[in-house]
Length: 185
Length: 392
Image (cartoon, each protein chain N blue to C red):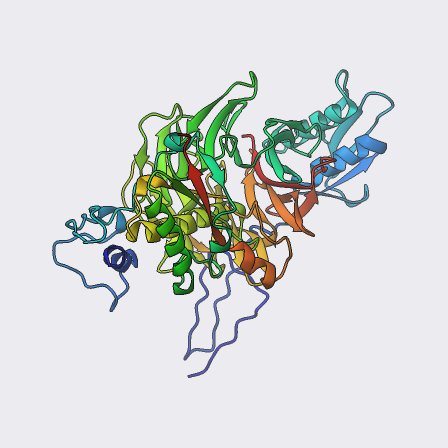
């Protein structure tokens, strides 16, 4: 809910002067960079303050010595539609599995790694992969996982799961993987 | 209402067609030469053989020259290459010498040929490019490294040997140095490397991903895409990493920043109302503006020509990717050839780009005015070469 509200407020004026879609509020500036922040909204499940800002990333230095476990959440890899970073409802149960584990093991963290299929240019895909990771991170945080325990990174189209050149392969490559991070005791 | 038909093959660049419904007249402006529609400069080559001949042909072709016989050429280039190169160039019609007979000594034959073409180009008012370098990403199985080579692909050297993933090498204008993204620390971070000394340092290692570095032409700043604040946004910092400023604040995507030649504006790929578009923003912040690429969808990976006149970019349609150009003020965009990720040479007419071949990329050069294209030499042992950055 918090997430939805934040996105709804940002998205409408971001459509820049589309008549009928944007209500001009007298005295307010349009344009994404001039958007004043929303007042914080309290949510029972998520005590984190909500603004129209994104969620500040976790500190990679804190997790440098962690062991990576790529196997544990392998079957929870979330898949995306073409050119999209929207977390589909069919994928949310996978996020829930990861969230439940992290809440049961609060010292652990997770690296969310976004990937793309080959049908995009390299740097566009690098950016899209990160947005996929960020979207999954927002889902995790919205269920109560601490944002400082969720890292994100993009692999662009550099690490396909399937090196084929058809939709069957591409659909397997548009994904976000969850890598468990465990710090040494 | 009578519809007036416009002859389809007349392409108008930058001019308006007046369409009068009631009147029978059409005002058709004369065809203006423009990107992809300019005739080559015809030259003839006589007396050169083997490698010298190949180098001369390559170097001239990618700068908009093409080859014909001595009766039809505008310029006559002749000479020999028994050991060293001897060469001259003259205007066929006026008979005036462009380069008086010259003997080259020292260096390799390739280099001598490059020098001759540089001198010839300069005499015609073109910026020389035959001794410039291009940095690029080379993939070797699972790992990719940054390489630098001569502009024609020869003499490639590895800049990194980390056995990890690299992306988006970006040469610093006027310096033998570059920025690039590397996963050496298991995370996409931006590094700066001095190619003269080999020394490198971490430039950006924030949380999230640090990608797409773009140094400004005056060497003072670097633009990049960071996600440390939760969204993939455009940031700028001084070239030593200090004074980080956030220029966009949007859950929509931003990617691939590039600079105007005066180091005042940044052009980048973004979205407008859910559709991909190019935008530009002042490096000191403020509202961004759209750069319309009318007719050509999904523009990404822009690069601004050193003379400021054109922005090259990749356009994506269902059928594939094209190298295109547009005025920095936006408007009609011109589709040129199949390919991606253009990088301008110092002469503002030749572009390096990557094109897909089978499952990998090869590097190629395009002369924008004539649309003449030629692949560069390929590095053996490397599967894919992409993301060129021309040293300017």
